[in-house]
Length: 139
Image 1 (cartoon, rainbow, N blue to C red):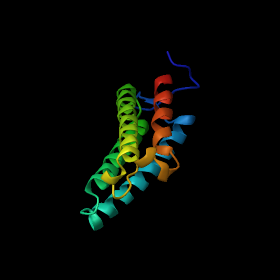
Image 2 (image 1 turned 120 degrees about the vertical axis):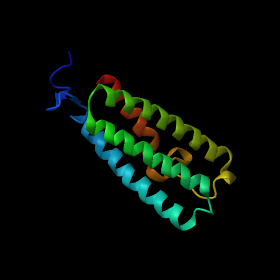
Image 3 (image 1 turned 60 degrees about the horizontal axis):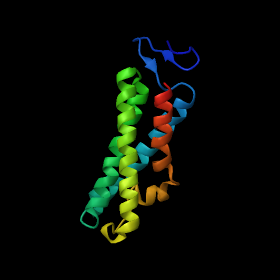
Image 4 (image 1 turned 30 degrees about the vertical axis):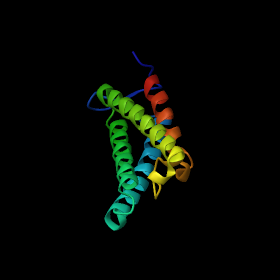
């Protein structure tokens, strides 16, 4: 049975994932949702033909961030497992795209959220899924 100070039960009986440091994770993921959605929506609607791969990958990042944010807020064991899997997929995406943008920069005429491991976002895209997985594994 979880310690009372690490998990809070919701009225529906689900364990909350947003207590303590989890609240900071939700906040950071929420900021990343807004940033990635705004960036990709603008770029896809105004200049998609310039860099379709980069802009599509930014939209994928936005979807991952939104799903993880939702899962953290929803709480419960199923949501925790789903968020953990999505954080792992997010990290794989950041590492793959980050490596790709360093090795073949000509493939990306414009940057993505995950370019150069999230350099344009202060490396938060590579740090956040690692932190999220550590938090979710402890829960």
